Each structure stands twice: as structure tokens, then as C-alpha cells.
Image 1 (cartoon, rainbow, N blue to C red):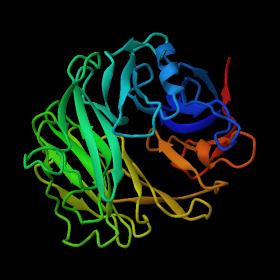
Image 2 (image 1 turned 45 degrees about the horizontal axis):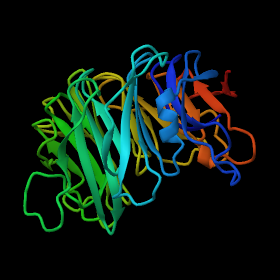
Image 3 (image 1 turned 60 degrees about the horizontal axis):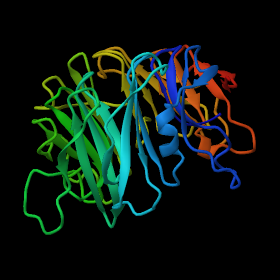
Length: 371
């Protein structure tokens, strides 16, 4: 199996979008499918909802996975036979609470755009973003909300047309990259901009109906001409964390304890790289994966046990091959590394790696699709 994305929810259980054949082979036209593991990513079972397969098989399908835990996950799929992003497609959300044995299916949403972002703040409250395409620094999107666990969706916000003077909608400027809701009311939308930090982070306090720029205590001009990349925010135990990566400068980690009403900047290691990936597993414990080359030994991983006030280096004990590896930690010590299917070289499916000591040593193995 060639993984497109991986979401391990524990050291044993996880979900992954995968290709059943090599996506780099021009003779192969394999749709993206869904698999689940319960033995630490060694073996996988296909759990793709039957009703999702025809949508996934369309030429320009889009899919987003939101894995909550070992049993509960959501898969949103847009089936579109044409490349025109503004043409209406069919989007359906599939949800499971029993590890993919059975799935519920939402009412079919017929609307322009392809699903790009998905998040749930609770078992009932969720948000779905359809991307209508990006060009010349503009990215039009439509946001939908559910209050019944994804069975029904209603339009809650959209990018106003160029001729609109209505405020509160989702600005067209900047490429939308992430959405997160800490409560059914408080949510954030991240973007990548070339116009500075002003449009990088938007906040909503009314469930996604209106959006406004989120003030951050970062220096003016920190993004320069290349822009910033914001990751998060992620909330755990009432504490929120936001990472600001900078193309030509020092990245920043920000934290909040009042749902983003105020933010505090925390120091990062000198060798964190421009775009570090930081994951917290509670208000105190977290792991930082630097943006440095995975092909060289050094202080690639860092851990914290005091909420990011201090970071301790973990020298990497092995370097990964091919174009590098994506790293997915599930606890301060347990993590997985994997090669994206589209980056795999050769005809064989790429292997995976597992660490149980924060990245100091790794064990290689070959994941298998059962059945």
C-alpha cells in the first residue's frame, strides 16, 4: 500500500488514506481508499465505505479524513467529473463509531468546490470547507456546519464576490490551509498569504458565521515578502498552541489559555528550522520535529514537559531515505515515520519506521494490506 496520509490515534490504532497501486506509475489510475490498523501499522484492513467508492473513483475526486480515535472517524468525499472548481459537485460525509464496520452517510451536498478541510469540536458539531480554487493570491471557499454529527450540513460562511461590500465573510485573499474549533462557538481559519500576517489567521466567535483577523503578539513585518505558515491552533486541556513558521527567519510558538483572547510567545530551539511541526499531547507534554533535513544526523527532534517553556534535544539515530519522511507522533515517546505514496521511488511500496524513545532510535517495517 502507498500511503497518501496517516493519522495514528495511539501506538496501536490508526487510519490512513492510501493508494492500492503505485500512484507514480502513469499506467495506474487507482483511487484513494481508506484503511485502518490496530497493530501498530503493521497490517491494515480496507474500511472504505461502500457508498464512497463511486465518488472516490471520479477523475477529480477530493477527500479529507478526520480521525478522532481508534473507533471514531469521519471521511468527507467530493465526486467531481470536471476540472472546473466552480462547477457543482457532490459532497458526502461518512462517519463511523465502530472502527469502520458500519458507516452513517450524510445528506448529499450539491455545491461548487471540492472538500479541503474538515473538523469536529464535538460528536455533534462539525465544519466542512469546500475549496473553489486558488489563483492570483485569491482562494474562494464555502464553509458548512453540522449540529447533528454530520448527517445534515448548512452553509454558514463563504467568500464574498469581488463586488460585495458585505463584511464578516471569509476573505478571498490567501490560500486556506486549516480550520480548528475549540468549542462550538470559537474557531480559527489559517491561510498562507504573501501580504503579511494580517490575513494569516482568522477567528470566529459565533460558530463560523463571521470571521475577523486574529491579533497576534508578533513583530510587524515578521513574514517578510515570502509570508508565514501558521499551523494550528490545537487545543488540549484548555490550552491552545499555534506555530508560526517563517521562510527567512525564526519561527514562533504561541500559547493561549483563554480561547485566543490573548497569546503568549514561547521560545523555540535555535535549530528548529523555518517550519517546525509541533504536537502537544496535553498542556505540558509535546514533541517538536524540526524542519531540517531528515537525511542528516543531528538534533532533529525535541521534547518538552513544561508546555513549551523548555525544549530538550533528542539526537536522531537514523536518517530516512528517498525524499524524506513525514513524522507522526502519538505520544511524547511513540511515533511513526512514513514516505508519502507520491514521493515513493521504484516499484515497491515504501516502508515505515517506528520509535518508542522520542526519535532516538527507529525500527523499520513493511506495512501490509490484509485481505
